[in-house]
Length: 205
Image (tube, rainbow, N blue to C red; front, side, top):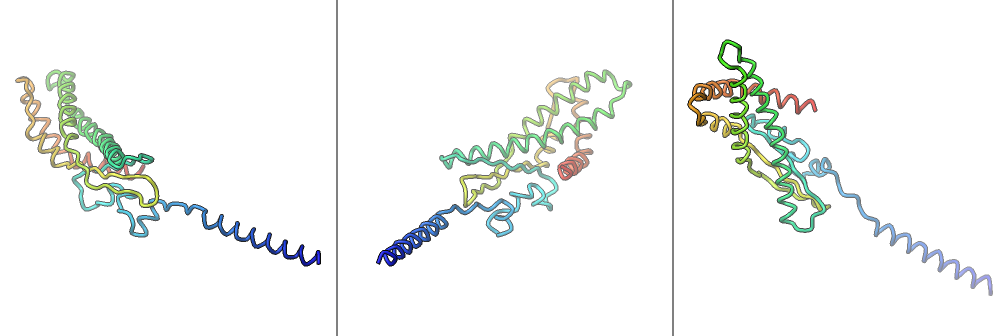
């Protein structure tokens, strides 16, 4: 009799342990998919993993990607991701402008007047144009991770808009009128090369 009772108790205990284990397994959290997996599954845009390379046909624009996570307020998360995307573009664009500036300054010779003054004027001009251009950055897309609290923003800066500002730029100082014309000409001549050099550098990284 005792053996029968023991065997029943053992059976109940085994059944309970089995139910407990199955319950724990069912409650185990499924690990969220990575961005690469989401894109491969068609549940996320390609720019999440490719950046500007996802728009290989668009050779006249800079793209920036920003993200924000663990923010309960959806509007705040969206703004935070957008701000990060704009900062990403700003860092790229300043490298591009620095390349343009370097190419222009390489043409300055001692026989063209005060080289130092001209260099400073070109630097100031580029700074003004950069600040004006970065105000035109637009947020093209916003995407939220379906499996975790993260938002991603895609920002875009049109290079032609920058060149348009260059064409319309006029220095307020009379002595820089001629310089402004030189700057406009050299920037337009070197813009594609500087852009391609930057893209090549980003690709290598």
